[in-house]
Structure formats: C-alpha cells, structure tokens
Image (spheres, rainbow, N blue to C red):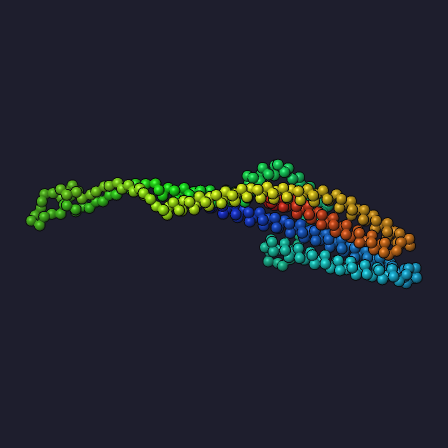
Length: 333
C-alpha cells in the first residue's frame, strides 16, 4: 500500500508537469500571436497610407483634368477597403492581447507583447526564436521517450495498480502475533485466615501468560475477486501506456513535419513579398507617368499588401510550430 501511494504521488507530479507544459505552450503561442497581429496591422496601416496618398494624387489629377473621374472613384473605393482592413487588423491585436492576458493571468484586460533584441522592430519575433536549431527527429524521439510526462504518468499509474495487486494478494499470507499478560495479584492473594507465606510475582498459581497466534486464511472469495479486478485494471493501464507512447511518437512526427513545412515556406514568402513590392513600385511609376490605369496600380497594391500579410502569418506559423515541437518533446519555454 505504501508503494501504491508513492506511485500515485509520482502520477500526480507528472500530471502537474503536463499542465505546466500546456500552459507554457499556450503562453508562448499567444505571445507570438500578438506579434503576428502587430505585423499584420502594420502592413494594413502602410497599405492605407499608400492608398490615401494615391487618392490625393489622383484627386489632384482629376481636378486638373489630367485623369478621368473613374480613377478617383476607384481610388476612393480602394481607400475605403484598406480602411476596413486596418480596422480589422487593429481589432485582431486587441483580441490577441486579451487572450494573452488571460493566459498569463494578469488582472488587466489587455496585455501587450514586445520582442526585445538588437534591430528588432515592434511586432517582429526575436531572431534567436527563428534561428535556434532543433534536434533531429531521432534525437527528439529518444529524448521524449525518457522525459515525456504523459508516458511517465501512464507508467506511474500502472506501478500503482501493480502495487495494489500485490497488496491484495498478500492478504493470503499467514499472520503471526505475540500475546502476553500479567497480573500482580492473580493466585497470590492472602487467605482470610492469615498469611499463607506465598505472595509476590511467583505464586503457586501463575499470574502471567505468553503465547503465539498463527492465523492463516483458508479461502476468501472477496480477495480473489479484488485481485482479478486489479489484474484486469493492470491490462487496461498497459494498453493505455502503449497508446500514450504511440500518441507521443505521432505528435512528435506531426509537429516536426509542420515545423519543416512552415520553415521551408518562409523563403518563398519573403521572395513573394519582395517581388510584390517591386511590382508595386513599377506600377506606381507607370501610373505617375500616365502609362497605366488605376486598376493596374490597385492590383499591385493588393498584391503587395497580401504578400506582406502572408509573410507575417508565415513567420507566426514557424514560431508556433517550433513551440508545438518543443512541447511534444517536453521542453516547454
């Protein structure tokens, strides 16, 4: 029973460790979510400023009769669209800050997140968070098999049940007990006619006794039923241990694959953002020279804004996948 209690204490410790790792993953993911929301809001804000500048430029051209009124109408529509995007992006920041405040446990309704580091702008993640190498898949599987709290929890629960089975079985063992008694006056009381000449601790009639008692149970159906029940529970816990190990391997492989996919997509997203920026600059130059319409410039602006937002989301995906992989191998923050 003492061994079963120790195993239950170990299981409780591993359960608390699992909760701590889950909380750490949630806090880290929401921290990066706030940074990503800021990056999206910055892209939407830049797009709105460019649209406002273009609207003013088109309006001046229309007032001078250099461009048709439809260009101004399109510029006004684009400005309104980017205004909506800016408002939604700002709301996304507040939503992420509210979730992060709840995860951290601060009393304030909103909690801001700022990445500290050299040459790190507001809304960007620290470089070490993006460039820290991860262990190989084989190393990750070996490390997680030894320290994963889910597997350790299943092992502790199985050990506790096995201890209960042994405790139940040992109720069949015989018990040996010692009994003894002593009485200072038994058999040595003086006679009514006078002293007998015999008194004290060694009378004619003994006033003490010592004995051994051996008890051996012959048959107890309750013990048999409890042992069978405990053994069946052991089989269930062994299957749960196997399932926990398989689930751990699956989670590690899935998290590792997700990180590699997100990391591999990041260079393409950077190249797309750079190409979209150059395309916008070329379209803007053509528009100012009167060689293109406002539709071409609006398409270039939409392409650039979408590419910048996708790049911010791609960076967030890398950071979130890295955090999930660390959780799968029980590293945490």
